[in-house]
Length: 303
Image (cartoon, rainbow, N blue to C red; front, side, top):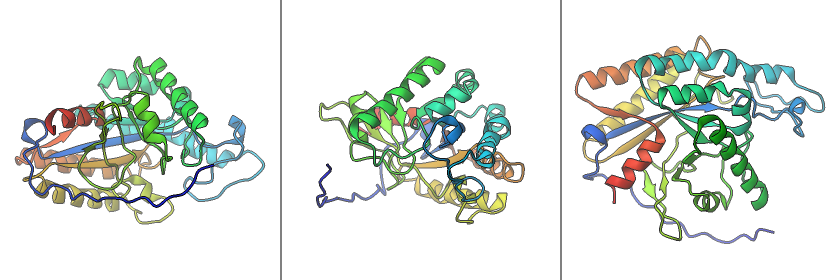
């Protein structure tokens, strides 16, 4: 049984001045993360205890299969994935795939794209679920099972991990024990930081973001049209570019195949990529890369 205790937290400020730069002198690293979750959602037909309740609407069908929910997720694999992937393939931009193990088993061809285009595969759980309430053996099994799936299809194990929603009280310890390089289970800033293992092995935390994320098309209704998303992300890019003149910054842009992959939303990605291209042409360089590359560079440059 877990006991509660008061945790004394110390908040360090983001650097306002720092000599650390990303490659080619860039001050801003931009990480596009495409979440691959289709097939990992809760589903009675997959043998789970219940159905997932969140897709284009928030509605859980109880006790019987929910084919509406299942096909909403299938859309991401069948149509949305390629629509998004093509944008990065055509521009030669490396991305990180946050991939659930069971989703990879349903769409193993995603690993072929990762190999062909030097994309990263990051562990995202076996199912699309938070480990917050898992006990230690269950969480360990989900991590090990996901590692095995990625290693089988991609040819090597993932170096990073990102939980859906909250991590558990032991997630980071497990990841460090299993020789991961980094995790993204942090939302508290725009600068990576180190949290080395008790044995002194280097380990990096790469903050993630929910605001520059297409999930805001769902539920809260904060993004409705494609330009709602693109204008918001572009504003973040411009602010961070200004700040990055004197200190490094990291911007994470989260995408989902079943969300942004819709025809009326994909224009947001075109606008964001176009803005980055214009900024680069005018001398405002950004580093568009994988999270693994960011973690490795941070270890090399910020120590």
